[in-house]
Image (cartoon, rainbow, N blue to C red):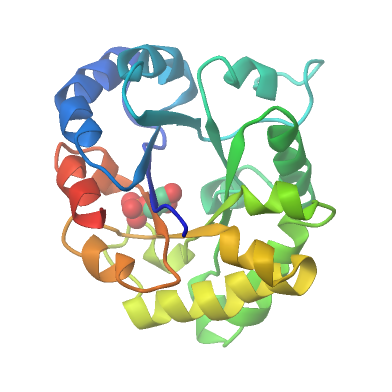
Length: 250
Ligand code: 13P
């Protein structure tokens, strides 16, 4: 049985003070929800304050990115061992990082290995653009992303990872993939790609989230699909109604 996981990716929103004020608003409601893992992913500078604010609750903390080295001349980057005192999770390979900051499949693969070596659970993002979708390339592209991300991982390492399927055309657009579309890619492409390189057992253990314009209104329908194990939520995780979203997912 895969425990559903709902993560809020706040992207570049909220100062540390704003983050704590928001967590104080939603903490009790989130903590009262059972049957689902909950993760908040604030901007890096707000991570320590958010971690302190959720201490003693069931709410986990994740970073939005990480570098793979432990230290060195990498100006502006954060190392895995800098995150571990505060975080249990880290988002890797988000489409915004791939599009604006030059992240490659190869780099994402290195980051996944580094995260796992430090006991952080990677939430690995994959997903096709509108052009790729319209050209009928979704299956081959997303399958390739998954296989590149998981290359060289042991079954044990891969099985603890979380994958987020986020079609780029659905991010921040209000255009959610239908349950049929999301379920078909998550089951037929993402889980199948994991099975092809690591076997069926691993594929059945890996939790796969959907991401892209998820709200408190559409989450229950998405979660009803047997292959959808949760959501990576952007805009809707910045509002107090995130509590409702998580409750509707549980
Ligand atoms: P939205 O929920 O705002 O569409 O963002 C999705 C996303 O990119 C989460 O990582």
